[in-house]
Image 1: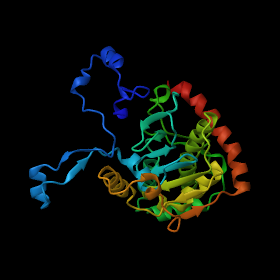
Image 2 (image 1 turned 90 degrees about the vertical axis):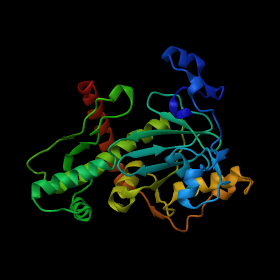
Image 3 (image 1 turned 180 degrees about the horizontal axis):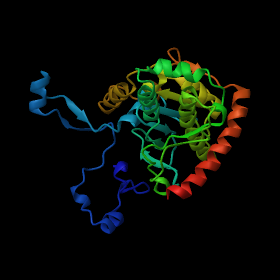
Length: 316
């Protein structure tokens, strides 16, 4: 319901006032349910196709990345989650939504809210870079080779900045943002571009992290999930930019686990969802920040933000 953006979070119902302004009939909307509530039984044709009993209950469920938070055992404040596949979601958890133009909010599948920012090309920028290098070299370059190229380049890519807004952003003031390299010189090679793209993604998230901190959100670590976690260099850069440990989660099917937990709770099979959801950290890998590297990235982030603000005026 909160994803419709017609949800009145104070009254926990659809906003009749907003619906009237937009000329939307909210009576046609589905009733609001808790994510763990049973809403009916499995449909006959589905049960027959899957060879399942007809009396299996169906719960309301929730959005994929929010259910994934539950599956990862992240049921409280203090940590952020970086979910990077094609895009990147940078997610925190709060008791109340953060009402600010830079932040989007969705209701959690358990108590509370999930404020988040989104970089549409957080992972796609690296695919674009790989494909671009493929076309220039006229040979197939794997991600592993691209990472090896980037590892040869020092912090800051020798002055080359990349802005990873290849599809714009979802916020009103910068929906027309574009990707770009800034600072290209004759000294830069393909390896600089490879590292700069990774640094650009990390710096964009570092900017979002600062925004969250300015809004009073305390973050002491970042849990990381998604296909991009195979790129350890990327997460080392993120750790150094943010000065926060990056915990590569060891639960590969977190969304599926979250759905199972919701179903078990909704059917009364477990009584305390929070305690059952929590995982130990035995299967995680921690990438820690380097103090000296962070000091360098602090200066680079300030330059990144200055140029971003300049480009913002151009984009709009």
